[in-house]
Image (tube, rainbow, N blue to C red; front, side):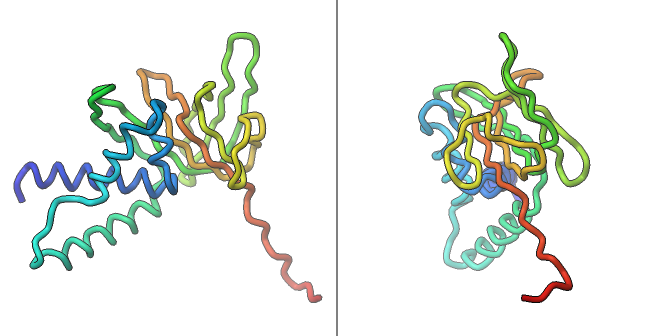
Amino acid sequence: MNISRKAGLTAGAAGVTAALLLAGGAAYASSDGGQAAPAAFSAAASGPSTTPARTTAAKARAHHLRSLARRAEYGTFTVHTKKHGNRTFDARRGTISSVTPASGTAPETVTVTSPDGTSAQFTLTSTSRVRNNGAKAAATTLAVGERARVLATKNGAAENVVGIRAHSPKATPKSGTTG
């Protein structure tokens, strides 16, 4: 396998992981109107071009990448755009462990803890896209204990939320009760 093919597969894995983590996160991946990220995700999702002899292998590889992405807890990837150059993103899936409301000049922050116990703090900005229980929402609707998927841009130590999708935990059925 040559170097450019390995790079294409690595880029494809990163793009597929991010897209599946955010279930449509390509729209979130760019704060400049969604121009840069969709091209990067569509190129990554299509992967390297295949000949008819490789079609089955390419489909199996894409299926494997989607299976891995569904189980991804967090990751960092870099996308190159003409407008912004290299942009680094952080994607994380987990439970909201704290929400700090904005006060004075300090912005609102949210901390998300992944299933393996690691956590990351993200800053919500005026351009952050928030969805809660499937609908557009204000950042103030986020609550501790909700499940969340976050896509944030990394700029040094700061991680500014591009998009966050949160939803209430699924209700567990009561065992031993009958109707």
